[in-house]
Structures are given as C-alpha cells and as structure tokens.
Image (tube, rainbow, N blue to C red; front, side, top):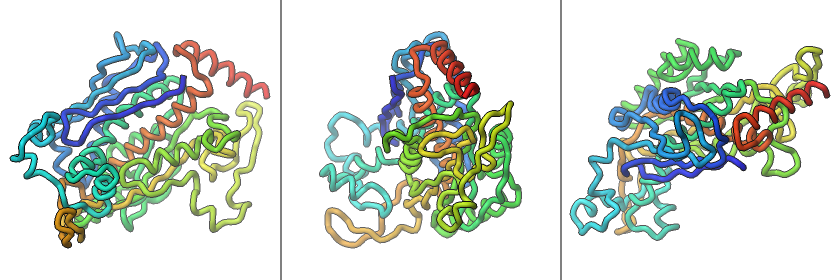
Length: 389
C-alpha cells in the first residue's frame, strides 16, 4: 500500500488533524522525538507572537497501540491554543452578526490566497480562505513528516537541514554530516553553522522588522543513507526528484526548488556538472562528486540527496501594500493579520519534513510490506542484490 496523508483544520480553529494511511505495523514511535520536531518548527529569529501562544504537541488518537503502529491509519491531532480567543468567530454553528461580522475580511492581502480563493469558491468573507491557506497548516505536515523520518531512521536514513541564505546574507558552504549539521544548526536561532553569518542574518531580520517589512531566503535539506533506486525513470510522475520538487514548492511561500547545484548548472559545461562513476570493492559503485544532488534519471544513485528551496518574503506586512476592497471596489491598504518578519528558519524545518515524507513514500513503494519485519526482509534482500551486481 502506498503512503498517503490528508490534513484538515484552520489556523484559528480548535485543532489541526492529519491522517496517515499505509504505515506498516510494528513501527516503534518515539513520541518525544515527534514533539521535538514540532517544537523545532516554532523556533527561529523573526517569528511572531503566535509562536509564544502555541506549544505544539502531537496527540495520536488512532493507529498506534503500546507505542507501535498497528497497520491501521494513524490519526494525529495538534491543538491550537489560540482557539480560545476565536471560539465565536470560528464557531461551526451559525452566528447572527456581532463578532462574526466584525472579524469579516473583505480587504485581500497581496501575495496571499485571499482574493483568488474568494473568487474561486464564491466566498465574500475572505477569512474562509486565509484560515486554511495559513502556514499554520505546516504544523500538521511536520507531524506527518516526523513519523516518516522515524520510519526512515529505522533503516539508517538521516535527514537534516540548514538555512543558506536570508536576504543578502549568504552562509559559507560546509560539508558536514547530517548528524553534525543537525546538532550545530539546532544551536542557532537562524539555523546556520557559521556564527558570523548568524549575527549578520539576525541583524538583517531585526532591521527588516523595524522597517515594517519582511524578508525571505533559501533553505537546504540533506538526506543521508538513501539506497540506490528509489523513484523510477519509466514515467514522469515516478521520478522522485520531481515529486520532491512538487512537495517543496507546495510549502507556503516557497517559489522554487533545485536539486544538487540546481540552477548553477545552466552556466556550466557538462564536464563541470555530471558526477563521474567510480567503483570500490568494499563500497561498490559511487560518484566522485555529488553535483546532481543524489539523483540521475529521477532515481536515487546512492549519494546524499541535496535539495534547496527558496522562500519569498511573507506577504503580510505591517506597512501594508495597496489592495482593493471587494465590497466597495475602492483602493485600500491591505488588512493585516498577525505574521512574522522572517520565517525562513522555521521553513527549513518544514522542508526537512516534506522531503522526508516523499523519500519515505518512495521507500515504501520499493520495499513495501504490511509489517516492519516484511519491509526489513525486502530491504536486506535488495541490498544483497545490489552488492552482487
């Protein structure tokens, strides 16, 4: 069975809900690790007041017994603490005027889903759009991805991420292992390794916030220990790098994705781009370099997966951009909802988890079984086959 998930819930509703289908039985879940990943998403220099209200924890309400998955769908709930301030506005029951009318949104914000969603779904209160399109939904996706990365970890596959750019400040490259990268970036408010870069990024975020503006950046995810052959060349939608790119661009405010050296390849010659194939008796086939980010022909080649995503500046500004009132059709300054000056460090965590999910999904397609024991047997048999090749 293929892995899949759905999420539901609004940013000011009572909770976010996720249902995962296709997990094998007997996967041992570490609940502290699951909640640790959720809490990582809330950190980062430049976050707004919402993160002081929420203390995200995942409550598993189905599909797990005595710490292990049963093979049934896994249901996860992440409660919204801010719900208590919105019980009237976001009540599912009909309400006559009053508070509901006061909180109605009729001034769409540039860069958001507000106007497009209102036109598409014929909604005259744009709150019905912004509540679901909010980046708060990524808490549910991190919870789902945190389960996926535990599945991957059981087979020695590790996921880490870092911020490599905020605005004009670019972090120097490093060649750290996933473990070392995870350790060092967790100590940084902007998820970088280099301390001077950290200082410059934080100063830039502070200045941007003081200006009533917002700023974006570029984040990177690395996946180590991936076997050769995840994904496939036989159909366009089986290519794992393509699926990862789709998942990355689906993250709120992400506008682009690159694998390996990505867009830089457009300025180089082929001899400077492609990774030469080597062989060692103990290691087997490997690549001399990893410019293609662990992929060839839509399939993993055994090298670490390297993915980058670019996040635009958050469009909710405290110095609002011009917009048009949907009622009067008159110009207006866009309505302000609570927001962050910079959410790039948090977005790095989100990207780790959407990438982890896609890798786990491809892993299950390749080695899938109904139990962890069956998957382990399939995996070990495949590794032996590759070694004999």
